[in-house]
Image (tube, rainbow, N blue to C red; front, top):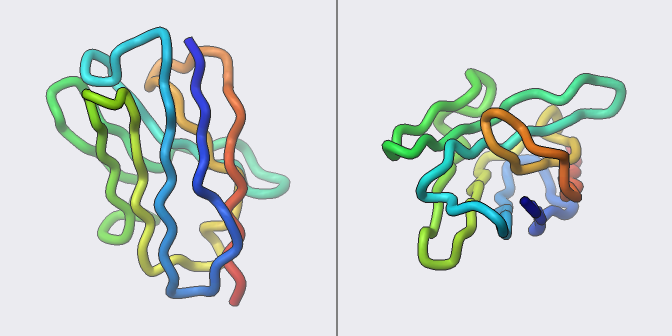
Length: 112
């Protein structure tokens, strides 16, 4: 399984970014997928999940601002992030809910 996150960058507070994860080795439509993030000096945490059923679950800190989605044809998982806050800063990774070895993440930096 290979997981490649992209789309990060530097944005001002209140701005938006869209992350994308290219997945190979599994079908995203048949898997429970999750976006994680790791802030400096902190443990990796779950941000948003999308299950095989299509059900989505969000961390309290991002609910209403972030949207997770998948494109079965492209075999990708995306994370639309709106109303970004400085505390959203970190490295974002995609993986399964039961994680495989971690792929390359993408850095998101939100300036105040």
